[in-house]
Length: 117
Image 1 (cartoon, rainbow, N blue to C red):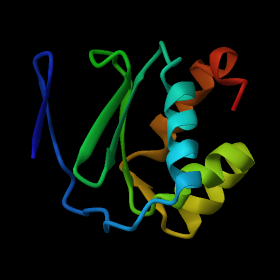
Image 2 (cartoon, rainbow, N blue to C red):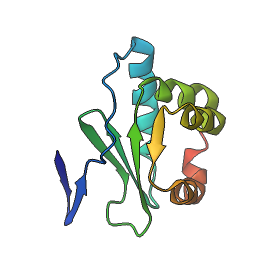
Image 3 (cartoon, one colour):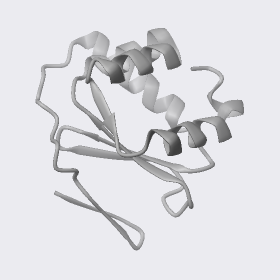
Image 4 (tube, rainbow, N blue to C red):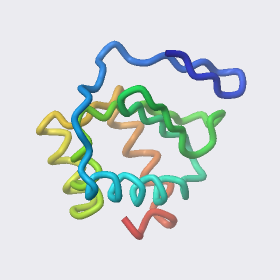
């Protein structure tokens, strides 16, 4: 799978998400988390979830990170428990990120808009 964003090509990471069934709660949580991530203006976060790819923020930003969702319950953890839930979900192996430091920098630069998280 290949996703074109302006002049930058993004290739799916080698580790693929297992297609776990999504509960209605997970679907609603994903929608809510994506609405919050849609507020990002400084940096770029690309999320691979199964066969889908979502880009939040500015694709041509100097700071960019790729996240792979391995279990749909990660959205519920993030929505209900915020950054603590995201950290615990990472430790449980529900999602991966190619550069956690860059992710933290992007989130810190967007704190004013992500406070609702």
